[in-house]
Amino acid sequence: MPTMKITDRLSKGETLLLDGGTGSELQRRGANVLKGATTDNIWKAGWLKAWSATANIEFSEVVRQVHKDYLRVGADIITSNNFFTIPSRMNSIGLGDRWKEYATAAGENAVSARDEENPEAYVAGGIAAPTMQSLKDTPVPDVEYMGEKAFQKEYYDHAKLLADLGVDLILAEYLGFVSDCVAAVDACAETGLPVVLGIRHIGKNGEMQYPYSHQKKPAKETLQELTEALEGHPVDAILLMCSNPEAISAGLPLIRDSFNGPVGGYPNIGYNPTGPIANTKMLTNQLPSEGKDILQTQNYPPSTLAEFAAKWKKAGAQIIGGCCATGPEHIMAMKPVVKD
Ligand SMILES: [Zn+2]
Image (cartoon, rainbow, N blue to C red; front, top):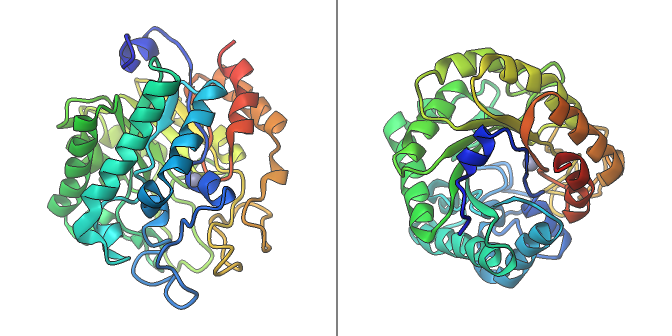
């Protein structure tokens, strides 16, 4: 367990190195992260299904090794592989009643890897948005779709379970709507742990929830609206995530100038997560990543990502890492500029 609270280090002005992608790294190492997904069902009832949730038990040693590799190359923070271990996502593969087993395994994998590799590192309990209503023709916030109570229960139950396992903060991530962010922050803060927000899919001009090509009526909220809505709510840092590096560069000044707390980013670098099953559909509409490759890392080699990291640090980012398709090699390259 770290001797100093993460919030103390951030308020002293320190910059912390976050890990890189976990699900994509597991996929690269051969773990099945698309359990229950087929060509026919992948777009139904929750795109990506429960994603890499089942790997926490079926490939727990691989998950632990990914965490350890990130710590070995210098990450100050690792994120537990809880992305979709929440009940609504586990339901999509028929394991809704067993979500706690998988969520617990994910928390334990991360905490034990940290304890063994670097006790001074932080474990973020990473919880992603429950549904994919944002992918519909007319995107809908999860809070609106599920009801705020049910949405907050998913976040609170999950965050509480992780807090009891010894994580150091909650990372409420992969959120795209203002109302979802506010509700998630309030629910996670009930645990008493610091809460960090991860905002997904920033557009190239720093807009929230970039439109997908098929959407008739894209969501049009702004980062300024987000920070205004969060005023008075217990959020300890805001990070922009799972967006391409240029979008992070565009969005960072917007949150830095409108939010009175630490900011940061962790980009994806082009990724086709469903490659093995449905290789025509892409996670992001912003990158030249058409094709069969699962990991399209050639667009942003580690040295390029390190250059972005240097710019983000200069722009005031205090937590910097990677999302989909980034691996330990990217985090290793970012370390000297983030930690100089
Ligand atoms: Zn991502």
